[in-house]
Length: 187
Ligand SMILES: [Mn+2]
Image (cartoon, rainbow, N blue to C red; front, side, top):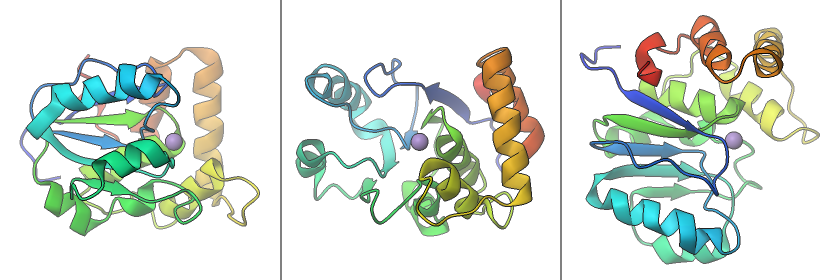
C-alpha cells in the first residue's frame, strides 16, 4: 500500500512473554501490559529496550499501575476495554499518521490483534467495512456485537488454523483472508 519496504510483524501470544524488540521504529498493538510481577520483569524491560524507537503503543487492556506510569507520553493510546471493546477501532488514520513510519509491528496473536496490525498497515483503513465490528464481536462476546458473514468465515478459518498447524497456518489464513502481507513474518 504505497510503502516500498516490508514491515516486519511479530506476534505475541502472552503479554508475560515478549520477544526481543524488533529493530527500527516499532508499533505495539493490542499487547497488554503484563499482570503482577511480570509488569516489572517483562513489560518494563521491553519498553526500556525500545526507548525512543517506540512509535506508538495502542491497547485496550486496562492496567492501572502501568497506564499511570506512561500517562502524558503521547505515544501511548490506551483506552479501557469498557470503551473500546476491541483494539482495531483505536487504530485510526490520525493515530497511524502521528506514529510515523514504522519498521515493525508487535501485535497480540488473536483476531483483534491481527486486525489491528492489518489496519495499521493500511494506514487506518479497515480491510473490509465491518472489520472493526467483527473484531469487537470476537474480542468482547456477549456485549451486543455481531459478526458479519465474512467475519464469521474468518473466525472459523483462524480456529481451524489454530487447531491444525499453528502458528504459520494462522498467518497464512490471515494473508488469504484479509490481505495480510505474506512476507510480513520475515520467513
Ligand atoms: Mn487481543
